[in-house]
Image (cartoon, rainbow, N blue to C red; front, side):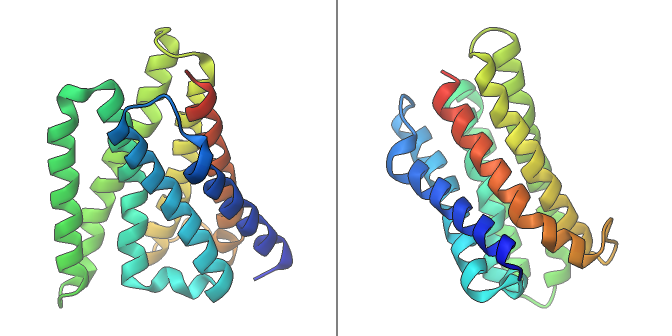
Length: 199
């Protein structure tokens, strides 16, 4: 791992740590819990990769934790702005994560990717579309669109890593791992700005 990548991962951890400790306000308690979980996972992921290298991404535990990341942000947004849908979305995502865990630790682990893709797809759609809709309709200010842009960039790196695991990479492994810390920092920074200033 290059020095630049290490610095970017450290900056990502610092941004996520700030959001966990002091960044997220003016939301309901459950929504704050979801957003704090999301930033906490980013913090943990950045530190683990910084300390142990990119090989940690192959660990099935890390794979499950990484799946919870977009789900937590999506559930936070749904709970805050589409509360009538919260129970349904929570049930679907919780069932998906549970099934993925079962498949990861069984002889059918290769099938877990077919749970991973719809989970990331649903979460990514919520994180991308809902902030733009809320900003365009005037319910939130334009800063809130940054949450959607952050979600789009995070979804991009998730897609690249998923295609790599499927053996059908869009880019080489080296290029994906080079881009990973930069996109993670970019997404984390935009999430923080959007959630804090998009009131």
